[in-house]
Image (cartoon, rainbow, N blue to C red; front, side, top):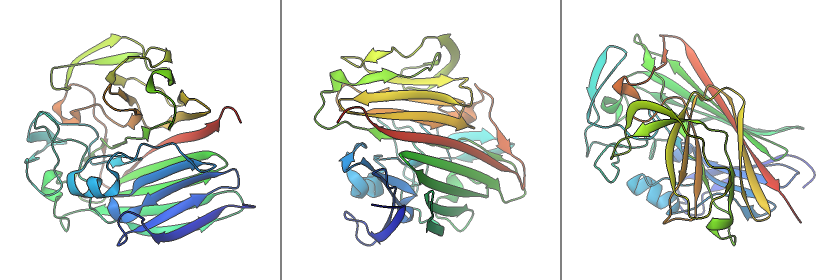
Amino acid sequence: MTGYAVRRGPDPEVGSLERVTLASPEGLEVAFVPGAGMVGTSMALDGVELLARRGGLPAYLATGSTYGIPLLAPWANRVAQPRQEAAGVVWEVVPGAVGVHLDEWGQPIHGLMPGLSWDVEDVVASGDAAVLVASLDFDGRLDRFASFPFEHRLRVEAAVRGRVLRVTTSLTATGSTAVPVAFGWHPWLDFPGVPRAEWDLDLPFTRRAVLGPTSIPTGEVRDDPVPVGPLGGLALDDVYVDLADGTTGTVRGGEHAVAFRYVEGYPVGVAFAPLDQDVVCVEPMTAPTDPFAGRFPLRTAAPGETVTAVFEMTAIRLRG
């Protein structure tokens, strides 16, 4: 390839939905499906897939099982109970309601995005980038609005430059009330052909939120850094707070690595590496788990205000 390119066509798993692929001359290709909650479905460097596919797009749409690079909105991670209160509003996230998916403890998890169709505003390849811009008006016209009754507009710009994917997410409060800001992203990494124990972590997360038995923060925070080095038999499912803008980290596996940069607006990070799956997740979040419970400060967007958060993922070939 001699320049940047954009390809549009049917998704190979769900042909009724369009997949948009952004490609760079440096060999990075990243795909999104705007019609399925703006989920990122692939990130490949020179043809080597770096994202965990898990159940793929069919499972994501059917059960909310995340994979790839899913957007978690209006909240990231889980909430402890149906009743929620924030920004002067009381509402319920009812198990069984449209768009509500539950974790192993019956707690609503990962927001309401699966199945929501986004409007594609722009798809362009220029001399220095391939860019996709899409948006979603979250308001009373949606079948799941009652589970987060705050009118707002989400806008995502995904840009590929060189071997860097830069994702800019904006939330604009479009109604007459303030909107709690609690979205995040959940990149799933996999390094095929490399044993999980040999993957290497370098994540400078230090301020760990103590979690209760159902992975809900207690409000206590401890200085407890993510171990640096080979993953080995380590299991991770931890929430870290007080991340500064510009925080960086890297996950390596064999000949490849993915570097993360929390450019701005993501003070929370989750490190997730279960023992029963060959995956690592490094999740940029605007608020901690169970964000509306009042244990941690919660940002709101005033009517008409836009809040923006940016992260980057860089695909790296270490050898070869």
